[in-house]
Image (cartoon, rainbow, N blue to C red):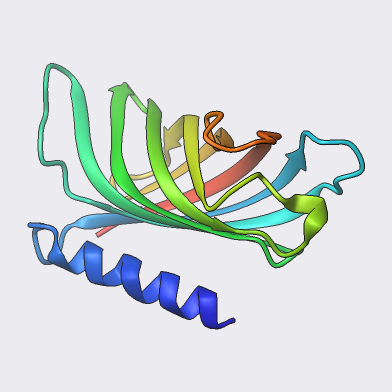
Amino acid sequence: MTFFRRLAGALMAAALALPLPAAAGTLAIGFGDSMFSHKGAPSSATLDLEWQAAPLWQPGQWRISPFVALSFDRHNDTWGGIGLTAQRDFGSWFVEISEVPGLYHNGGAATDLGGPLEFRTLFGLGYHVTDTTSVMLAAYHRSNANLYAPNPGVNTVSLRFLQRF
């Protein structure tokens, strides 16, 4: 638990240091299932928390926003990252993509991903229910990009609820 407290504290301090508008942003909460790719690893229920700041850039029809993400699963694995996400609307529908580095702490040998630096690649398809509320089905992969051996990776499918403030 000490690792998680330090990680959460460091991520929140970094998020507060970003030049973000004070009252704008989006909170995303996701519930999913993680499937580890190495033999014998159990699948795991996963909780994702993400804070996306208001867009800093809007090239073309894309919105680029800084964000802080945390992920927890029932095997006591934790991951946290800070990076950029891109969204594009298609009417009421939207897509979101991100590639972000983060720190990973495995809860046991069965869910070891090879090292502490793990990268998350996410693709999501969402629907704007109202002007401030959206739902999204997201799929993401985390791995160490061959920085460590082994490099098993984990794939997660998550149903996300987003609330813009």
